[in-house]
Amino acid sequence: MKIAVFPGSFDPITIGHESIIRRSLPLFDKLIIAIGENSEKKYFFSVEQRKHWLREVFANESKVAVDNFSGLTVDYCRRVGAKYILRGLRTSADFEFERSIGQVNKQMYPGLETVFLLTEPEHTAVNSSVVRDILKHGGDISHFVPKTIDVSLK
Image (cartoon, rainbow, N blue to C red; front, side):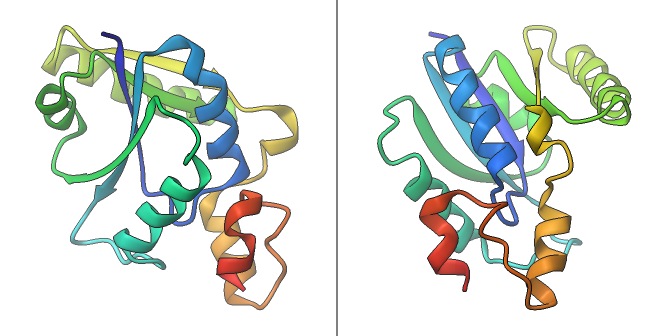
């Protein structure tokens, strides 16, 4: 079984995340959207809220599971039997950053492959930090998050 992990903070999930996940589904038998928890990082939304939104957005996708973890992503992948990490790339800077992490992950877990999908051009500027900033300043984020969570954020 081809199990992939898509790790991230998803604080909140964006239309870019949604696109990468939906486009990756034909590649894997199971995709675990894994919310990484870092005790030293301050999140805008609770883990439970983020899990709720992810489950809501992918409610009709039987291949998708939602989980959370702390620690190294490679250790989580081992624990759940994943052989793939899914990552989205928006820019060349993303590629350089993700490539180095992917190479280190491969050294730590030789059976793990990192799969990159390019963000669709219209989603290149969208990321969770920008969405949070818009939200903090009372802006309309409906164009940047999946339709199913639009009302929940207002």
